[in-house]
Image (cartoon, rainbow, N blue to C red; front, side, top):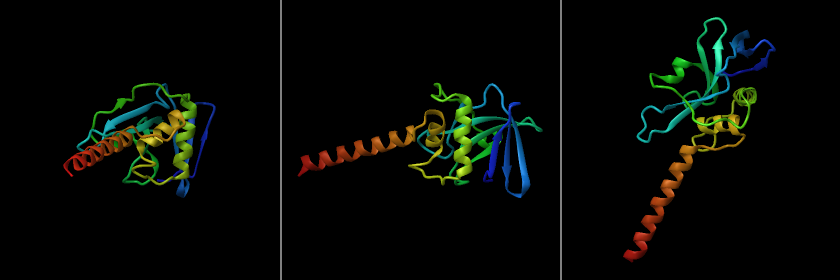
Length: 163
């Protein structure tokens, strides 16, 4: 569901407003703002689906993850269970350039903007890297584009030798 508004409260709570006067209250904790990852399902390449740990639902205590998924079409908040889809979830290695509060601010801003998912330009990895490091970058897209360029160079070289 698209975020209409969000606000950070001084008591560690985040208020997220949705259409229809629905409100989600989130309690931040020591993991809020950390990047998580799991292997994408139904891929041959072990592509990593990244997200940002937001905190826990204030009422249910269920962990919440911000992530960008092609099925929804834009960044959104989901439960940990919905994010995991039965896969093992890990903390992403490395530290963010931004502090956790800034990571959450950028991630929520982008979720509110509802920028459409794009496999090359706005996927889950570019979403988390923008919040974490202030840059649009997808490790897996870089890896795949580099691999395809390498293959095409080899094919071109083989064709040149053969002719």
